[in-house]
Length: 65
Image 1 (cartoon, rainbow, N blue to C red):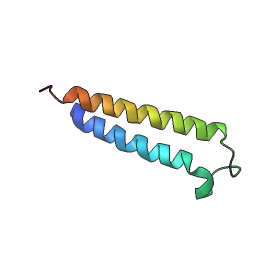
Image 2 (cartoon, rainbow, N blue to C red):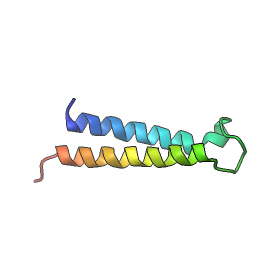
Image 3 (spheres, rainbow, N blue to C red):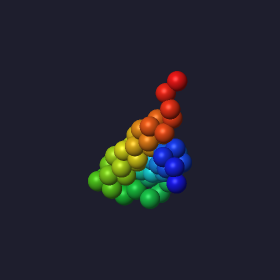
C-alpha cells in the first residue's frame, strides 16, 4: 500500500469516526442528549488525529512542483 493510498484511507476513517462521535447522541448511541462523554471525546480526538495523519501522509506522497 502506497503512502497516498494509506493517507486516503486514514482521511476517510478519520472523517467517519469524527462524524459518528460528534453525532452519537442524534444516532441514539450516546448516553445523554447534549452531553459529550469520555467515549465521544476519545472518538472525536482519535478521528481528528487520523484525519490529520492522513492529510500529512497524502502530502508526503505528492512530489512538490
